[in-house]
Image (cartoon, rainbow, N blue to C red; front, side, top):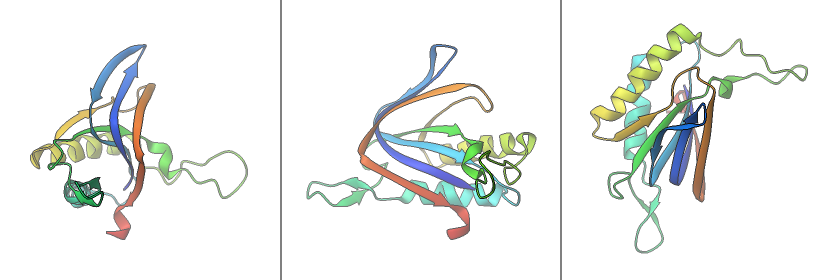
Length: 148
């Protein structure tokens, strides 16, 4: 499981020209799965995200969690994060989890975040989404479950 996490002042997902979901201050998560990922992986990553202290405190130190700042999460499925571009010029998606499996894990992951008392908005798995954001900092992390 890989996630691109961006600290945002606001973010939204539009589908067919209409805003589907939006958040204020918090995290935009671009979420991707590969073979071998499972519910345990989702729980581990959700817990790590909930505990990250990357928001600035009154001294300008990254010391506050999403709970400390009353932040929200916008979670968007993004299978292309696992694209393989080593050969040729066209990405290969053979390392991406099949959609039938990935959609179940995506839903499970978002529920795990909610169980941790986080406010979570989502995109629609497989939809043609337009993502807008105002990155704060900018502050961006790549979370790879294999490194946790």
